[in-house]
Image (cartoon, rainbow, N blue to C red; front, side):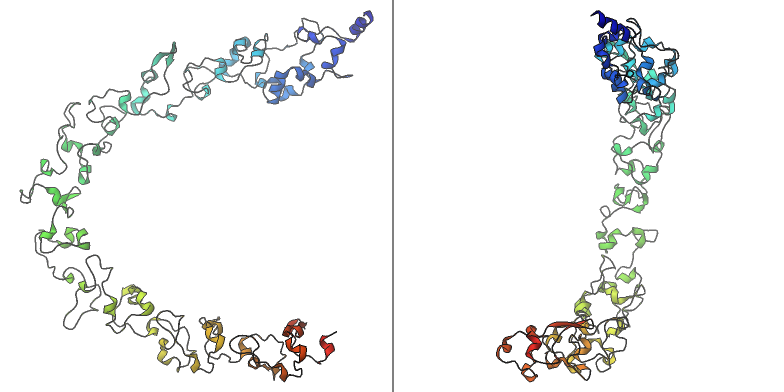
Length: 593
């Protein structure tokens, strides 16, 4: 035991501080020291978890770049005796910014102990530590009392600065829901933000202050006779100031303003010298159709006192709608488009009762067709084709068109009138041709012979239902259609190309090989021509006319039952693949190996 104590005294440089005294003894050295080396920062942080937690979050003094790289023992050395204070620094020279909270304004003058108090530490374990500088938050409410009692959030810096809490120099009322304008700018805050007692403490109200209407704060001198939206008449420059008629919504009264009434100054109708309790009340009971209550009857009651039957608020000179004046009582009842026509369009004289000619449309309307329908004896009226519903529509029927020189049939029945009768933005009904080429372009360009196309008569081939359908008799040509040819579309043979967009009809070949591809590699050529008809018919490409027994190899015995493809195989010569039908020699060994 004496030897052990003597050895410990020789190895230890001195007693540990009180906070480390439990680590005294040779058997516990490695809890702080690495063997043969200095004190390990990692081992310090094993115990000092609160420091490690801050460093992991890159928060606090020890996480700063100036401190993180240092050894713990550089600032907190030990073995200097039980009473040695391991936390030592010059408070006056301490750079508080490195702790993550820069001291500004009034904070610079505050003693450290005024802030680093146990009561301001939230962590229960840190709160127990004597003289600790850990555990404080960096928000205002962590240290300062919230005089607003959580009614304005916890970001004090939105309104206050570090210099002093009052006044709230950063607060801008213009950014609130109630920007200050007019006289409001000069009002003291306390006039609107009253002080009261809340929770047993003095409290000044800044949030939830009603401001939707002026009467939220101001007394209504009109006793609610004019509604509660003061802004309709007043502005915030002064209550005695007047915003004018453009602000007040007269439609909230029993006399909504329409037409010219909207432009009349309020003083023209209302007596402005009345008291606040009676102002604008002098016209109560006047109905919107009681015109003579304000206006002089220039007709001396000849038409009764219901002015609205003929007039409307836009102007006395404008006639109202037909629900008032009954035009049917005249000799010309209004129908269709006439109902929407302004009276002055027809009644152009000073007196509305002057007689107007109205027996025919032409009595008022200009002849749009410029005499195209003028007859030798009687000129038809517009009503022969049009109705009062509008000139754009026509009642001219197919039956009527059938009596003309050009009865409509086929696709012509579905063709709109303007497609034929509107040329160069002008309607034309006389002098139109009746031949196809008078309207339709000749797309064949003269390639069809006169005998098939006399006088460019399209109807020799085409029908009026569609250009695609035709009635041309191909049997009258040198190439009568038979078999599968009768099922083909014309364009399958009369192929459109760059020169003939709608197909070529003249100079076409008549032999099979000139239209169809020669697939036999000229095995059946006779003088350079393959006559397909020797084996095939017009019905299809099946070999129906070929007789093998007329060849040099008659089919006998088993050969008679062999499929053609059993002997005639596909071969390739000079890059061309084809079925071989002709052989240089016919012997058994040619096929049988």
